[in-house]
Length: 349
Image (cartoon, rainbow, N blue to C red):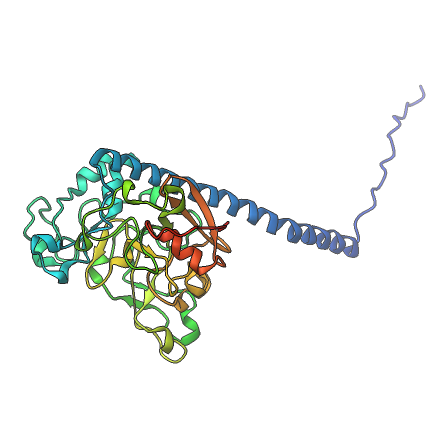
């Protein structure tokens, strides 16, 4: 019997890739990634900017609800009140306006936990703080209950600032002058949650913004904004800190401490009202004549400052949100911060 042989198909050998071909493919992929990466980054920044805009919109609506409830806007800073004979040295020490807005941005429980009582000096002055019995067990320099809560509505997703005020920090760009890590000049602020938004306090004509300290007079109302709600800034981005070295000396002198950290809870005294508000003045342009990567060069401590390229976002008194270029005419920008200058605003977008 003849043995039957099973026929097996012949296997074809596929040609392999040469090293040169692999390198070419890798190079093509690298070029494609290089072309697509900026577009991806731009798309991500656009999404972050939109989220930041939504935050400003929500805070602006919260301000409208507050004003509708209490018939005035909150004070930028509930420090000492001169009309009550309180000391001027405590006018920059107390709860900030974002504390008042908490119940109107779905943070009623946080507001109640914090238990603000309207008294001045409860943040930076330990002697006065010790008089309040509704904060039992809080040690000297300790964070008040709730003050270390991150409120997502108060943070811009583009910001690279730490979520809490640190004890030491390297102000971006400061290594160029040999600073390294520098200490917090106001240790009472350490551990508190940060914010990226501040209220508009003053213009080139003075403190005629919509938010000001109790020491400066009665809180404003929307009826006081005679320039029109759509022409007047109420809230702006401000995501930066300053150092203890003056602008004229930064080229030769290294800073040893930082200050003016934006915290939603308020200010810790000693002229620190810039933790809660900005101004629109000739010496306070958007982004402080610098950038996030060179933050230590900020010309002063009361600027709008943003991680969005080219400018910053603002909530106006009518609740609308606009992006304003850092190259905006300084006179126009000044008028945007003044609630009653009577000037025609002109184009700003």
